[in-house]
Amino acid sequence: MTESALATAKVAFDRIMVEPTPDDLWELQKALLVIGGEPAGRARSVARAFHACLRNLESKSASRTASRWGAVLGTAAVASVSLGEMGEEQEDALSRLVQSGLPALLEVGAAVKSAEAWEVEAGLIYDEFAWFLFEELWEVSATTRGDMTAADRRHQIELLIDPLLDGGTPDAERAAIVVNVFRAVLAARLLPLFTAS
Image 1 (cartoon, rainbow, N blue to C red):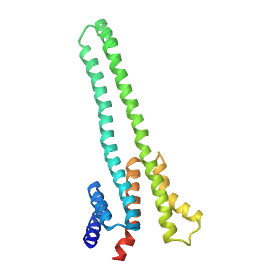
Image 2 (tube, rainbow, N blue to C red):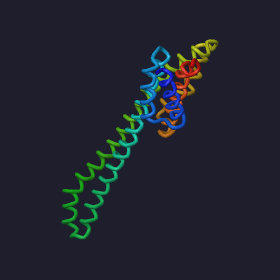
Image 3 (cartoon, helix red, strand yellow):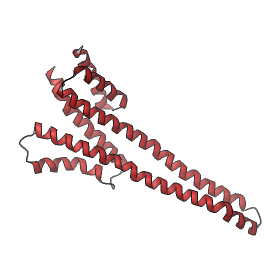
Image 4 (cartoon, rainbow, N blue to C red):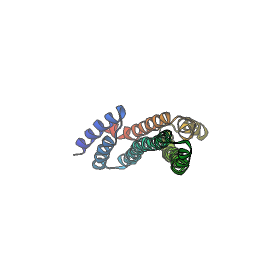
């Protein structure tokens, strides 16, 4: 049964290396539970965090789209109020615009501010995963590169992790970095299992 689970883990891992999906990480998790032992436990921990990362990135993308559409629709509502009133007499139009347009403008402003707040909140997911990945990279590096000084190890890891923490790094780049670092850490954690078989 362990050989079958190991084969399943290898297949899932190969797919994850090409294009990671939450479903493949879930399959890997199940296989690693059957395999058991400390190396499988460490790999499961990374797979669980990687799964959460992918789910958060999916959710973030969907939420961003909804937030932007909200601002666009609010702007369109204000435009429709203003355009509809242009055909009426000037004084009546001004009165109605103040009565109905001002609340609509405030609604758009609120939607835009909500979208800005969303961007800040969404960026925090990178902080969470950077923390986890920094620790994992440190431990993997200490195990495989015991000859490195702590300062060198820290510097090498910071080169990978710092762009995740930099709000100036474009979101698409941050997403690509976090996925690629997760892949590397997962590969490092699975290597002892795959080479032992």
